[in-house]
Length: 299
Ligand code: GRF
Image (cartoon, rainbow, N blue to C red; front, side, top):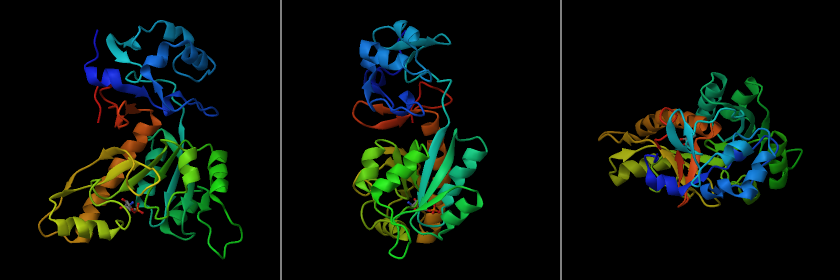
């Protein structure tokens, strides 16, 4: 039986997170065609936590299809069962309303993960205070001139590793992310931006400046974008977007509030997808999210 989307079928790659265990990371990008290769089979059989056992793999046909509830699925389409809870680090510089909504979603069961550490660029920002109230450890980075200990980018990576962080969520973090961190967390760092990228992004587009520029341009639609982080501002691969209207008499503050409302929902949905290993990479490098309700649909 054929899958319903032949284009995706030939182009889907296994996501990095779907093949990681708590203590061990396998190569980040394996083509679906590698499923049947002896190398892949032997790697997989090493890990008790891995959803795809050696015996299961031997039952796959040559394109890596499997049957589940009478429907033919690619390995990445098949709902996974024994998914480990993921550890999240959130980075903030301000009030942290996105951080709060993601944290709440982890505590009420909407996100299959936990915020295990908060990184704040300001010791006393709203996000850091909320984290302390909730008992979440706070790391201040970068450290300021008057702070007692100086934390390098390498130290930060070591600290995040010590919390066994799987994914990093930037939520209003205004400092540049060190290259060491980006290299250490390949395809595992996300940012939320308050416009429909690639429009109104890049250096200098932050906070209310974004919404002022949107209104001044005459654009009729705006909305948040969640994208992977690379070494430039706002240029990483887009993972999810949500559209909101720009109304004729909007002030930047009114537009910002409408966009922020959607940000909170979108970051929770994307965090849920990450933690449930529903993010997969198309062959052309675009990340897509498999729908929870219908595993053959992508967003
Ligand atoms: C959000 O608008 C987000 O898009 C941008 O910074 C803002 C953070 O707001 N990157 P908050 O601190 O989450 O309230």
